[in-house]
Length: 169
View (cartoon, rainbow, N blue to C red):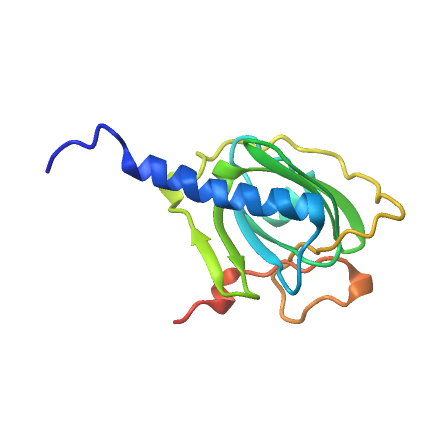
């Protein structure tokens, strides 16, 4: 087989991450349209990921967050996104580099992107951030996720969900 000097695999992966970046940037600027919401799974110990020590202890390998109703201060840059979410009633600030993302799924339209583990950032100790106080009065959507049986009630904060629950076996 011929050597791929152009690296089409890298070009395609970067283009798909560009789709994710654009969707999140639009959500940051205009909010989520219609019934759209996002399941984003990322490696919690990848280089550049910033989680509180509490969340890192709870999700030492990977974490899935849902951006839907209870999120705030979504900021999207060229290489990452940052978002405020509430976990068990405790507000947190997450920083997630795009190269740490394993999957993206919008169940409202059954659209998903999967990145191979080898495409994700190599595992390294995460830089931890302290919890950030909730920003009062910001009506921005979406909760994070927790892997337990029943969905959290709105007053309980975010719910972390493993995407394995939705995969065909």
